[in-house]
Image (cartoon, rainbow, N blue to C red; front, side, top):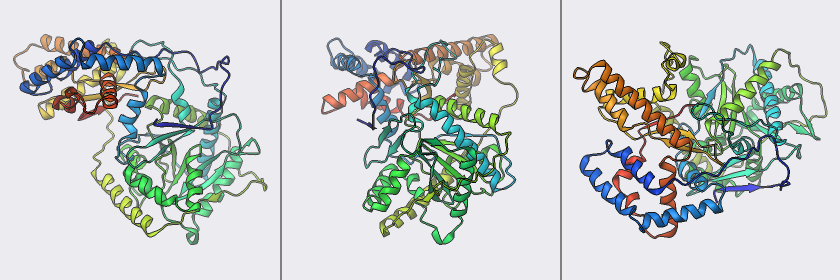
Length: 552
């Protein structure tokens, strides 16, 4: 199992919380429907001869009484026995089996509005306010008092599964040599002392936020953060930038962690980080012009090891960055939850901070507060070698990222809505047109579609490179003089309709990607060799997403 739960507390079956509206199980789509749509999705994206071969393979897989029907039956039985038949398959495939480093490749970020701190105390007040907001939000989670989310956009109004929210502050991605593990710790109302980890100057400090069953006030938090900032300046106490190891590939980090765990001091430090609520990263100034692009880069990778790249711990789901230069935001480890959950949490925090920011927070004169403590590390020559390698690879990630934050200002979603078109569908078709204009071809495209209408639902894929989109982009580029404007408009409308229809299929559990994944993994579990449909070049191509997109 990829998800390990610690300290689980049984709940009375008869109790029902505000956030526990029942949602149905994810359906298993009909086999023939998925196979037909798979061929539809790929026909115009691969050479004709290759497609003819694929069509024969797919038809053989789907014949009556054949292998496809046997695998479909196993999936149906799995649906009856599990909460969500694809959840573990999807989690492994999307995240836990992936060996790439988390920065840039997997961990997204949200940028807050630029702050203008007059001094360090301003920065620390902001951080104290943010931590107070985290405590407020976590209290809603601990008491199961979070209001239920309801679907917006297509087929709006359906209640959504809320389980992802409980991974925000109580989970951890543990690196493995071949596969990671998502560790989930069940929180309870006012447990024994809780803590966050504050990263400052590449050092890590334990900040207790609940002491003797009392949540620290913003004043208390500000006092403790002042102590941490002062401790972090002490060069004589400076320890190796161990956070760098979490920026490495997952296998390399697992190897380094195994070495660290041999020493009891390191084990204690790792345990404190793995069990913390979240991280707050007090960053140094980045030294670059603070436009949207550079602020995003600061959050995505910290600017490299010589800036703030080591002032992170990427395995923890929630890291809040509060930079001395006003660059603030959230960096998240993506495996426990999807983008909309991160956005909802962040919006709550920002609202809390806005409502409470008018008061001046002063340091409380509370002498009995225990001093924050620095996490200690004992590094062998092997760990120093891992650190050097991690630093070099992080610099490579920084150098290889071609990124720009672009704001289109000619018109926005209100104009699109006035045309009675879904803004999401409009943008997806526009992306296909832009890609075709640049490369004269379409490619398999990924757009995440939430399936939280179902229990433990995460996402499926909207395949935006539809045959109708292909017809439209060819009309606009290849046949622009041969076709009239009305003909081009009709093809545009067809492309929008196809995109909208596929979106509805995806959010109702009828898309092809999760289904094919489930069939593949069931085959892997029950047979020595994968069926040819999953080794065929077209299937491999279908899962190489040159365009990967998301709307949150």
